[in-house]
Length: 474
Ligand SMILES: Cc1cc2nc3c(=O)[nH]c(=O)nc-3n(C[C@H](O)[C@H](O)[C@H](O)COP(=O)(O)OP(=O)(O)OC[C@H]3O[C@@H](n4cnc5c(N)ncnc54)[C@H](O)[C@@H]3O)c2cc1C
Image 1 (cartoon, rainbow, N blue to C red):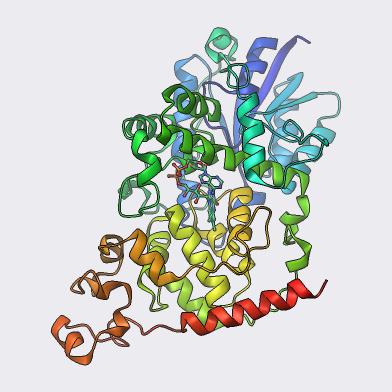
Image 2 (cartoon, rainbow, N blue to C red):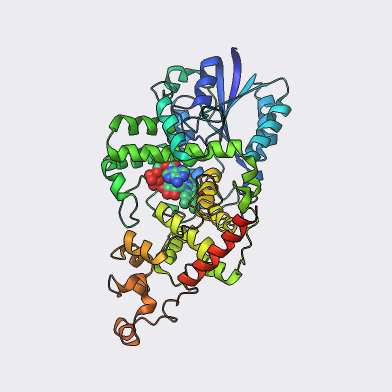
């Protein structure tokens, strides 16, 4: 099919290279217009009007707009209901087709279906772009989706050839971008949001930010296998927000991991495959987006849900230093290290006995890299309700986790200055310090830093009972 005019609608793919929808539009059309919509159907639901994600998107959209202008085109930037704006714009520009990349979340699928219907005679094309493999591309020998990661990963690796990771050569057809007068970019304030502390964080935005982080990470990727579990060490890539908003290409990252081919790069490739794994879980189990557990046996666990415990967890005031430091990290930066996500999730569910959905929602509101499928997958893993999850009887000990992964309390000290003067042993369980030690350190437990709100050993037994009851009830 050849078109005169077409429209590329950018969503979570804010880049001008290796982009499936942009490539196909440019290849098949004489004139390609580009648009991004700050969608009020998403933004209106955000309670906090100072949101790092919106600012990250705004900065990245600005860079994409400049890049497209340098190629002779432009990016129209709109604010309103995308489901109405896109058909209206398609009509106004007299385009023959609209091009997008697939989105796998049920609300986005419904939105796209509505747009496609409203477009009526105008073609609507959607492509795989944000994952390596999708939907039914990786199935087991019985033709069913995988429920366990390792065999899924092995099947992925078998199919992971040059073809699967081939880049879309957007540049070859870039001359088809429609020439137009540069349009205005509404400011962050125009769309109802205020600036955050994003500029002071080490998270550069846009394609240039993704490129810089990737270059930095590839220089230390060989240490990833050993360094990735220690939150005080710069061991991970910090690319999750760029993957979320498509300022990097997943195919490019996977190609790099394959080419480097050392133990660090292999483990990192595994993590990228976990990301795909959770996307395909969502595709095959859309009920998880309505709050259901993957494993129905644990859908109605009888959590006591103590509100005061939850508030203490959110505020980083549980009295367990590594848990509290991790919560300070998410509250101050919007990011949390993966090891800490596992620890605080386990602590919320199995120490505080609070429904994992409460924590999932808190992360959804606060994480700058929030992605429904990975977040839900991570929470259901920790709560033992998911697929290939932590077995329910395996419960993290927040003290030994702290001793193991933050031995010298470096991470704790960064986020909880009150504990600065504790020695490396005391810092993991400061409530054990005697009155004399507390006086020495000028740190009064219960005043300068909270006493533990629960006792791990006894809460663990309660958690085991709760899960045992549910697992026996079938
Ligand atoms: C409770 C919980 C909630 C989580 N919520 C999210 C979320 O909302 N968004 C999100 O992107 N990740 C989430 N994760 C996964 C993981 O913690 C983050 O992807 C990672 O910490 C991001 O840091 P990084 O980019 O430096 O990761 P790296 O270690 O450099 O990994 C590279 C990339 O692989 C992917 N990845 C790594 N680990 C996982 C994983 N376990 N599951 C799926 N993908 C993974 C991410 O895209 C990540 O950017 C969650 C994990 C848990 C346990």
